[in-house]
Length: 312
Image (cartoon, rainbow, N blue to C red; front, side):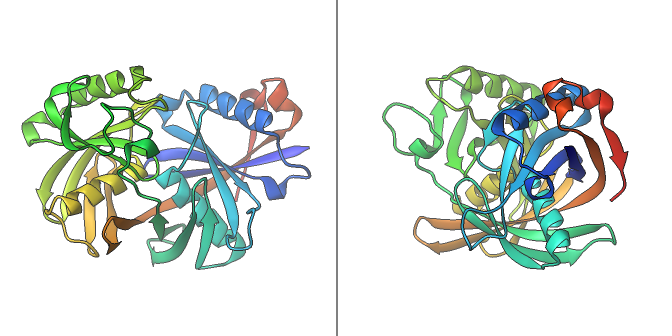
């Protein structure tokens, strides 16, 4: 059986997308994990920027166009990958010739709408991000029997920072810092501590530094579990925008520009009622080519040697 992966790019990160509906029979979960491991090893993930294998499957309801799973280069299936969702939205829009639809993810059916055409090969989408929760049990985070953590110290991580914990729905802890403290070394040290402590964060956590530059602008750096200091995390961009608004420095219902070393992305924070939030992540992806190989290559560990490229 021939297996075809779509190679795509969003925010300077590479993704592979597997559409199970295009195969004569779907890959098993075991095949998917083996494939993800081989793709990451063959491309030296952290150096090349390959982040996730996206698995598109038929939705298990009549509401969404498709279901998308996110297998990170660490080998772990994660709740949501914001930039991976941009890739999936771009692919599904082109495949089905639709401008708006829903995508089924682990915890929600998310609304997708085409935004502004950036070029003939790239399209921008507005993507709903939810559920959003400040309850520590949703990260999960176990900390002194607290229910939430908002602008409080975590001495186990740092004596110099205040943290906010939030699930968007991926788990995050964030800290607002001044420009002099917007440092990679400090962020890496805190991120490594957080992800070594499986009592505090049983499933790991992304750690971000936020630098306010204006009421409508932020700068962001993120450490992701299993990945380290990474290119931007889409759910971190959303989490930072929400806490910026809720701390009184940003405006809801207006775009917030979040700058990272790969560029600028925008988020609109929607507040529907007390403690009711959802986020609109505006970004884009570029579909590049197909990478093809035989199903037997997965079990033999030969995907990296035997794959060949086909144009879109």
